[in-house]
Length: 249
Image (cartoon, rainbow, N blue to C red; front, side, top):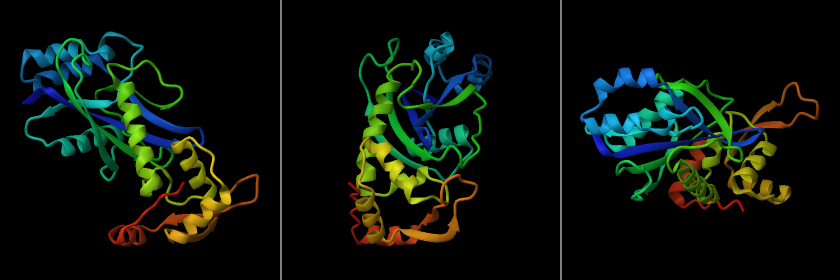
């Protein structure tokens, strides 16, 4: 049984050379119709899906979301949605906000719990959902038309991410396993939308002892090859217990 008035939407952030992006999808109408008999519990749910903007127009895109099954808790269902979208089980996931405005879905009352997740687009092969006819990364500055209040959900997720990276190194989840200091600084500048002093930034990183020198350098680059680093999870966990303040500003 599916809960008519409660849903989950996931903002999946990614980072590459073009900046910060969000993963969006368009739903395959035929695939959704075939799945409805197994997942719906009432005519109201069926009507809700049939009126979804992504199903009535080709211009709209949406976040990965769905109505919550009665037998799953919210966090577990969010993880299920992420796996359907990315094929990944171990993804950084945070609840951001509950969206409950009366008119957010014009034809029925739906309360949505929003989450954000962080992955690196170049580091993982995405798994297309069986219900998605299109799956695409969009730069946050070049978003397509979105259904309902998904633009507001994305903005709330971005605000949450910006607060998190000021005190916790969550941004490392957007980087590949090995990265340069320039890539770290670029990541934080993109997320916080501000330029940082390179010397001060690197000095603070070194003081925290969160990075491990991999002993490797970049390959096949036109400029001088930079050192590659890795994030030390064990040091982070220890410092977090002791009261880590990762204010990188």
